[in-house]
Image (cartoon, rainbow, N blue to C red; front, side, top):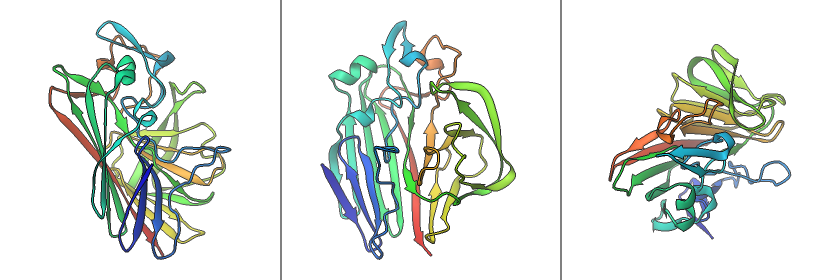
Length: 285
């Protein structure tokens, strides 16, 4: 099932299964800004990453002395969300734990995801609430994919010196780092940009990046705010790019004795909530 909102500028559609953003379309021209998924390349579009990001070492983790299994990028994207509320320009979805999620992630939670269209901009807000009598550990991130072409460019808000942390064929962090930008702000998307998989950055000075689609005269201003990690990814030579604010990161080969000690992990006390947003402003030049 899919729900749709819009205004005079944008039409936004979201699938209830996984609360996946599935369309961002210009009302004036009919242009589709969001990657539409192609099983031959990558069938995804905008998965929500919760309660982990990336890969857990051996797909397992320890919590309070007990071992649990956890699939890549977590559970939320594999279950339905309920449509919590709908207005003319905003959709709010809610997912809670169920019998199956508790087997892999032994916490009660509420995960709200809102999609709000304002003019030419879309804001997506994720809110996690701890429904347990104890503290709760989690990671959360976004993974939207936008249509683009080889030769397009990403322009950061500020000049950056960025080293990409690398993952191997098992999606586990290695000690390898590659210098991507050296006191520069523009990253050209080439056929080989993602030959080593995702670029994973931390410590950015910028809080936004512009995706310039040069051939089609389209521009997306993507704001990722204070996210401690920011990943950029696509299949090699594919006509899209994922811009991914993360509050968490893949495991490395250094095994941690408890989820609470995982790098980038977030912590909530009883009844506490955590929220983060990303926004994208879609412009047709």
